[in-house]
Image 1 (cartoon, rainbow over the protein chains, first blue to last red):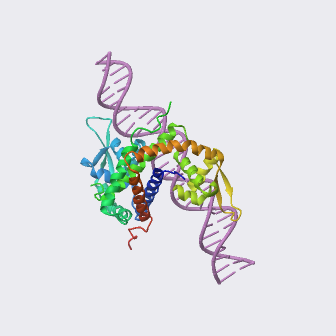
Image 2: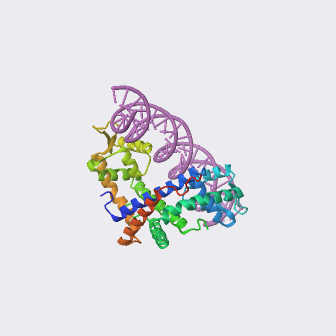
Image 3: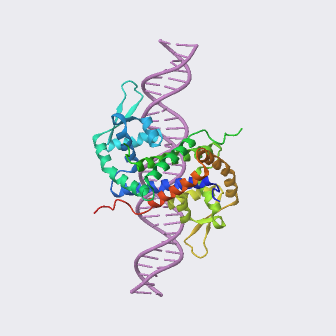
Length: 155
Length: 155
DNA sequence: CAGAAATGCTTTTTGAGTCAACTATTGTCA
DNA sequence: TGACAATAGTTGACTCAAAAAGCATTTCTG
């Protein structure tokens, strides 16, 4: 009766599955002597962005980490020569993380490793349609979770 | 073309959804001035266990953290008087984390908060059947993810 | 057009978690 | 039996990330 509800079970499954897949990706990257998973996610996100750059705040949101955490993550990627910090002409508060050619190269080296692991994790027991269905369901849950809290702080 | 594959999308959805629900639970507990989520998970896991106790190694696996991490987590719960460390008569290497009455009480106080948030996150857009389906699919993915690596270290 | 509020990012601090090394106990097998 | 390996857990050094405070710039408002 840990959670006793079906939703509790779903929550547990979500946690365990996320942990298992994450672990798998991290292990695969580490074994190939590639940078850690957050680096890959950042490179991949920037590669998709217009002009291959993003504002710090937007990037933090995309990567699901705090702004403070992103600042330091970007620092590490800069030190590795994969990314650079550029600035906005019209608003001098904002700074961009901009993908460098070396970062794009690294991304292309890492991508097959990540894709292969995802194939194993997702494709093994799931049809194409099931994967799409999973996506849709998860997004439903996510959007629900982003709403107002259930416990209205009471009085 | 971040991931360009359907599985990449599924991976992204999994990550975002997990983060959103986790954040929601953490916020709700913090606002109610309750202990953090890992404490709840530990209390709930122990409450389900036979004799309300578990070996350290098993508990670590159930909570998806390392043994070293669990040792310290248990230390904190012990300091809070919610749990105690007990020992095995027949194998003096093993120690148990054992739920104390105060821990069981705390669990019952926390449970409604967590359940309410999970209801909102999962029940809002999901039927009962869909939730079960989600569970099953996630478990499939998890079991696939626990298999051997895809990139066979090459040569 | 000042002064105040809001925005964007960084810095600092703090705390939790991982990893590797270590102790203690039990199991194996020659 | 006695040495060696395997298992269970803890400890300490380190890394990573979150939270809160801080600084600079921009926007809003009277």
